[in-house]
Image 1 (cartoon, rainbow, N blue to C red):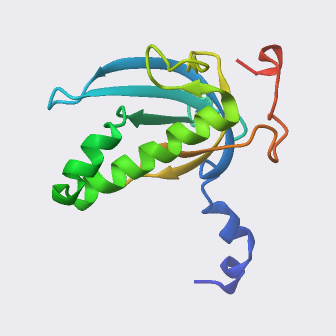
Image 2 (tube, rainbow, N blue to C red; image 1 turned 30 degrees about the horizontal axis):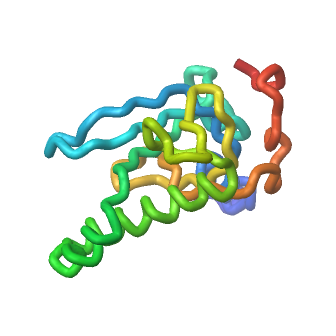
Length: 160
């Protein structure tokens, strides 16, 4: 292969602009159940400040979260939980806390007193990663206005 292909431009071609910190526009909120029957909330949205995907639309990212068990249940049962369940509960706790502190929002329906439910049309600053299957997912909520041009955008400024 020619050394012309060692140009740094090729490093940029492989970068995934969907990962990292972004502004995320919520398009749908579904309250349903896992196959086990346990409740969950699936929040689907578009990454506002990432390049358009192959169809010309904004790339998607989602968040699927289960309600937190009570502190009493965690104290009584967590020693028997799998590592995966322990990590999922810890991650959910962080997301609930970030949403409440930074946005006064909750994925629960109805939300606890003093908080509003997440709804289609909400815009959040988030951190996005890929899961094992290659899908983009929200893993954390960040402070509004933290670093991109779409932060704090009015609905009329959103391009779709």
